Image (cartoon, rainbow, N blue to C red; front, top):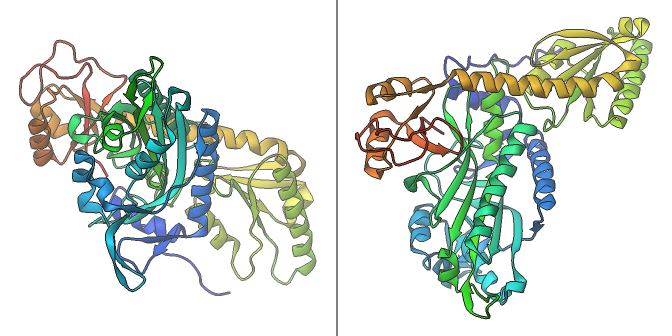
Length: 484
């Protein structure tokens, strides 16, 4: 039999960055692309994204949103209409200047985000308060010319969804901004088993052109933060730039209030780094491409035994599928059972079923748990009823593991010296005055940023900034952390 063993991964507490890079390739999530900064998402990685997309899309539609699609190419002059927006995105724009063998009369940007082109069309579609609200979302790819790239976390091209809504009042738009943040947070917790913190970005961290940016922040297993989804209230900024007006109830012209919100393939990076271990991925069952893998085991040169085991594996797989479980039978030849076990462990499959001739004689199968490593003997006829509950408990244990890790790596700082020391080991609650210059100075000294002003957290009433000594600028202590 050929030797097919993969090398061991770098321990993640030894070199987390190296561990991450090895995992994304050795788990067959991505491969290199000929284009700098872009990556090929392989079938296993794309299946994970499809599951994310399917669940989120259902949540969007349940909150009244519809999908549409806008063109990839956007006139560059659109970006120049909203000053903060063009300033924020100019360094990242990829621009088409030639097509069809000729120079274009006006350059076209490859979509980095779609507020501008959507604003142009909303001005056409919205005439009256009766046309509002517009609750639209698109699934698309975008391009941002990044200098330093890492698979999923920061790439020149990536996949995402971007919601864009228009409302008659600020109150309705702010309610939408919060609603969609809650959708993201619920998805992260209920489907990905990631205990995110919801909060508001400071002025210096807001999306370009937004009046308010809300975020979900997730802790990775190296103690760093990852911004995992954002929701923005744009006020009238884009409405004024694109003249999106309507006749209100008093028959007077008014500008709409807009929002945008986005969630991308970056979240796959969050799943990898929030749950993985030294053996590779650990995938949340509700999103895993394969929730269960069945590995038939037969003796070499025992064709009859292999056939019996294969038939039973297929029968069990059909029963599990009927119970709503995503299952794969690994019947590949030329690979030892141990090699297959190692591969599916590396790929993070929650549960593995080992099935051999002796198991058939006993009427049982061995169920291996990726999170605990435990193996349990389960009656073959009980698998279809037993495994869905096991998967649910797996999700709960994975969530509790991530929550316990996060809580053990959040501290409070009462002085600047404490902040500098503690932010090396995780997230830190501290009071801050809100001065952007102070934020920048802290970042330069510690490489940490204000991740958010948490919607829930320790009060900052009556306190002073740990850096400047000025009164706290926020109702709650902010979270400082190093981040991806």
